[in-house]
Every structure is written in structure tokens, then in C-alpha cells.
Image (cartoon, rainbow, N blue to C red; front, side, top):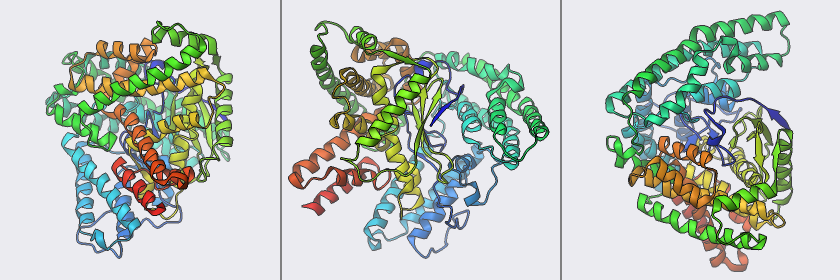
Length: 619
């Protein structure tokens, strides 16, 4: 299935997500962006009773399973946008008419609930639980402890940037892509929510002011990259915004409404945008213009109050390991050396000069492998995914029921998991409004779709007999580690056997992830400048400078996240090697994969324990 959308919410330029990988998750939304932050999506069976809407201290639950469901549901109800995204408004008995509150008061109330749920969890006797319940207990404890640890740094992030983690970008994406309009009621809900955008942005400005007082201010370049997109909405007419055009397009598909009724709804939407959305962007622009005057050119979070502790938290949060910044930095350097040696072998087979730098060599790869545009890009991705789906049976017996579709957008390279209610398939958003280099496309498709994010995240939602939180919560090190492992697995399966250019694309993508271990830690702990980081990545990967500039900017505004990919991949490969070595002829790759993706997303230390339990059971 093919879709094209002109999505404007990824800001500034195609360099941000060019042929890289998946786009995360901020504020609870489950878009897998280079994706995937520890995130959550609402997961609840449509037949399941939701129970209480709040967790009450002193209440005795009949079982820990009841506690899991009721406490997690209480947390989910704090985020109505998340419930709409998952298609679970009806299951929770709420209307799709509220935006998620991001005020200081509301956030602190949510934090109090998180602490309460953790305290109540710890009152259960873990030793009295079954093995599966113990696994869920440990998972939930890890998730909640991480949430509570994050409270200390609630104002250390940058909520407005040029990247998708920005509140204004996520709000726009919610309306254009996630808010359904399939009936009159949903159209009216869309309009009701449009009228709340000014309130949400007021809450955003409140948070920005608190950060300003704490001197948590983005580097100066962030304002220069961010303001143009905000001004585009602030200076637009209501009917020229994406908020309106998306609504109008969705309304066209609604049956049972006359043309006159649809026009009335369009006019109401335009009025809401004029009264709420555009003024919200105008106020945000005005605030940022003044805040920019206080910004410096310092890039790393070392400049923030308790910046070192904050960065250490981000590394633990994203990698779900205890690796230090220095260990991650050195790991990246070692991996680059190994990957570049593998590149050299293929370059030699192609007869490329031994003394050429990577930028020149990969420029030749682009030229010789060819480029695609428009429909041809989408058709190629569809063909790659279809071929993968038909040829992964030798290593998987657990596959998702949900389909995956390719959606053409202006700036793609990310995956959005299917809705729980089955109304929306998994979606690989691919760049399709420019030129794409053919050699890099297979690796991106394997990462985002099959056997990468789609296999992992769609399967996670479909697993039976798991608590809802284990179907909904995911961790960056696991999610992105699996997607990188999937790229490597495609090579093992022979998908690049007659495609040396595609294999070089895989290796360049892996070198890119290894270089990120070096530059992320370099920026945030070693005082590297923006230009130093750009020069290092260009030299070590051969990627275009403009694309690299966008990536380095991303690591500055989203510290630590990019380190999780390679850390997770290495852990999964090490665990497989351990299983193969100990089990010998008894090793079954399908069974191994079932352990890794058949229990939902796990912190990497927990995944290690589960794989070793599997090994012990087989011996």
C-alpha cells in the first residue's frame, strides 16, 4: 500500500533524517524516531476492563496482575493524546477531545503518581510470584525507578527545537497524522482540540520560563534553526496551515456528511486555528526571540546545572546499562576501526583506490549504484520489504499479524507502530519528495520495517498474556539495538550477496552509529565543539557534511539518546554468540529470536538474564 503526505513538522531540512533510521518518543508518544526513546504507547485489549482510573494508597489488590493493569491504566490516563494515538479512547471510556496537559502542576501530579505506584509495587513479595510475574515485577520496577530518577532532571531538556522531540512539532504531528477524523464526532473532537492549542502552548511557555530561570537555555544555533518553522505557522492564514489541510483531507473521506455540513466543519476548524493555533505560535515566536538574546554558543550539557549528573542519567536511561561516558567513547572508536576494515575489503573488490578518503569513495558508490525519485522510491522500498518478508522464515517463526505500509513524506526515515485496535497498520515513513541514493535504501528498510522495528514493535503489541505495560513500554537500547541487529541479520541472510553497494550502505550506517558513540560523549563530556564533531563524523563515515551537521545538532538537543543503538546491537550479538558457543548443535536461531522479541522490550541487563535462562534450560 502506498501513501504520500507532505509533512511539514520535521523542521528545517532533509538533512535531519536523511536515510538514517527511525525517528522516538518524547512526552509518551510512540513514534519510533531514530527511535525510539524509552517510550510508551497505550496498550489495552478492547475487551479488557480498565478498572479504577487512579491508584489509591492502602487499597489491597486481589493479585499483582490486577495491580499491574490498574496502576498502568492510571498512568496512561494522564496522557489523552497517547490514548488517541493508540486507538484506545473508547476502551478507556473517554472522548478524543483533550490535549495532554504539560503544565508544571500537572507534571508534578504525574510524578507523585509514579512514586506512589513504585512504592506500592515494592510492597508485593517478589519471591511469592511466578517466574513470569517476577519478570513483569522487575520490568515495572525498572521502568518506574527510571521515571522517578528522571524527576530530578525534569527541566534539563529542551522542549522547543528544530527536531521532532519539540512540543510544537509533536503537536502538529498529532493533528496531521494521529488524530482520526472518520465521523462527525471525531471531526468535532479535532476542532475542540484545536481550540486547546493556545492553552498547551501557554503551559509550554511556563516550562520555558522555569528553564530560563535555571539557565537551561539551548545553544544559539538552535534558535536560528527553529524559528523559521514556527514563523511559518505564526504568519500563515488559517487555511494554509497543515492543521487545516490535514483536517480538510481527512474530512473528505468521512461518509454520511453532506458537502454543506463538511464546509461548516471546515469553517469551524479555520476559526479555531485563527483564534488558538496561530496566536499560540505567535507567542512562542516572541518568547524565543527574546530568549535567544541570552543564548551562548556552548553546546554540551556540561554547561547546565548538575550537567554531569544529568548526562550520566541520560546514558543510563537510553542504553539501560551502567556504561560510563568514557567506556562508550572508547567503544565507538574501536567499532569504527573494525567497520572501516570491512569497508576496505569491499572497496578493494570493486577496485576503488586504496588512498581515497571515505567521502570520495562513498561519492563514487552513490554515482555507480544510482538514485531514485518520486514513485520509484516508494516502489523500491515496497519491493525490498516484500523480499525481506518472503525470506526471513529461516530465522523467525514469530511474526507480526499487523501489516506494514510505506508512506512517502518530505523528510522520512522513521517508523510508527500500528494502533492497538487494528485501525492503523505499522507505517514506515520514507523520504519520497527528492532524490534517494539506491545503495542506502535496503538497510533503512530492514531497520524500520522487516525484520527491524515492525517485527519487534508490532509483535510486542500482539503478545498474549502479558501485562499491558510490557506491550506498551519500550527502551531505546533494546528497540534500536534490535533494529541494528536486524540490519546485520539481513546481511547474514544473504540479502546483500549480489549487491556490494548495498552492503557498503549497511557498513556506512553501522559506522554512523559507532561514530555517534564518540561524538555524543565528546560533545557532552569532553568539550567538543559543533564543528569538531562534524569534522570527525564526516571523516570517519563519509556521510555528506550537511546531513552530518543536522545529526550533530540532534545529539546536542537530545543528549545520550544516540548512544543506545550500537550498545544495544552489541549486547544482542554478544548474547547470541554466547548461546551459540554454549549450545553448539542445539542452538536454534528461531528459538533465540523468540526469547529476544517474544517478551516485549526489556532493559538490556534483563534481556541478558532471560537469554542465559534460555541457555540453561536447553543444556
